[in-house]
Each structure stands twice: as structure tokens, then as C-alpha cells.
Length: 276
Image 1 (cartoon, rainbow, N blue to C red):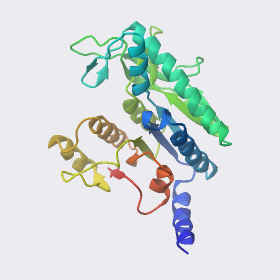
Image 2 (image 1 turned 180 degrees about the horizontal axis):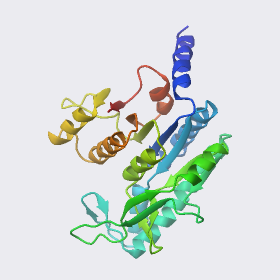
Image 3 (image 1 turned 180 degrees about the vertical axis):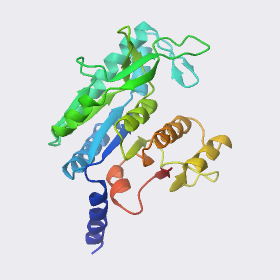
């Protein structure tokens, strides 16, 4: 009976979300672990089969750092952004290509269909070098998003898998923060949800307890009073930016099990949902 109740509850969410786009950002917590990636791939395929269109965005910070260390390069960060010289940019492109292929293959191995971006044919994120007080190299600010290619892939029944790499008007590649890329992409695609799969349960309060729901103003307050810290800050800011651009809700959940399905298709959810 409990299983039946879950399925009935799920039906109402499926009806509500059918034909909508969800942007799902996955990090190294998923991409570096085959079992975790396989489970997320299953969730993505099921959502797609139900008529909910997932678009995956990935970063690769942990693996980029590992490759930089192998090359004898010490990673440097300015305000959370990786200083990216030309050699580092080449490492970023190589690592992102490997991760992107890994995700596409994992979805295919579970019986789904996916396609990786950028594919060398069209610019996805039109970007320019980020202006900062200190030169941080080939780090980009998104100026525009080419959604037509992604929408075409969705219409063909494919799950787009997007690397957070931009291209400047002068033709060189730029490293873009993956949380920011996911937020901008969700806004450009008129997605109804943006979902961050992380290594923490969601947003925690001052007593380290999970906060199930937040408004945008409450999320801002958590940053202001420093309850939110570290890597949670850019994720919350990305969530709020997406909400400002008419994405309906943002979610921060812990990767593990079928957390993605539980967050979307059950009343309880698994992490934190932020509403406008």
C-alpha cells in the first residue's frame, strides 16, 4: 500500500511537470564515482521517459585540480574562481571532454540517449573574459546562450549534457563556473526547475539541521548572517539568480541513491527547495 501511495503521489507531479525542462547540475560527487553516476543516469532516463526534459550541466573542479597537480601546476583561486592561464585552459577542456563523454556513455549504458555539448559546431555560451581587479586569465562571463541547439536535441528525444565552457567573440575558449552556467542556462531555456546535486544534504541552519524550504529572501539572509558558507554560497547565489529570471524553483540536494527522483516526485523531497 505504501508503494501504491508513492506512485499515486508521483502521478500528480508527473502531470504537473510533463513537457517542462529541468536543468540538473552535477559535480564531482557524481561524475567521479561510476555507481553514483549510473544511478543519476537512471533517474535522468526515467524523467525523460515520463516527458520531463532534463538538461545536465557539469563542472569538473576536482579532476581539473588533479590534472594540474600532475602537470606540476599549483591551483590558484581568486574569489572562488580558478585562475586559468592557457595551459590550465587546455587542461580544463581535456578534463571536461572526458567527463562529458563519461556522462553520455553512462546514460547510453542504461538505455537512454544523450548528446554532449559544446560539440565544436556551434557556440553554446557566448562569453567574454571576466573583468576583475586581478587578472585571472581565461575565465568567462556569459553574454548569451544559444538555446536552439539544445531545444533541437530535446525535440529529438535526447538528453543534452553540457560542459561549462564558453567561447569569446575572438574565438578562444573560456572557463565558466559550472553553477553560474547552470543558472544562466536554466533562465535561457525557461526551465521550471534548477537542481544542484551536491555532497551535502541541502541548506543547513545554524544548528546544522536541514532546511526543507526557503524563500529567496530567507536564502539571502543565510548568506548575510554567514550561516551559509563555503561552496554553498555560490550555489545559493546561482539559485537566486535563476529565480530572478523566472525559473520557478531551485533545489539543492545530496547526491546518493535516487535522490533526484525523490526530490521531484515525492511530497517529502530529500533536500532544500527555494521558491521565489
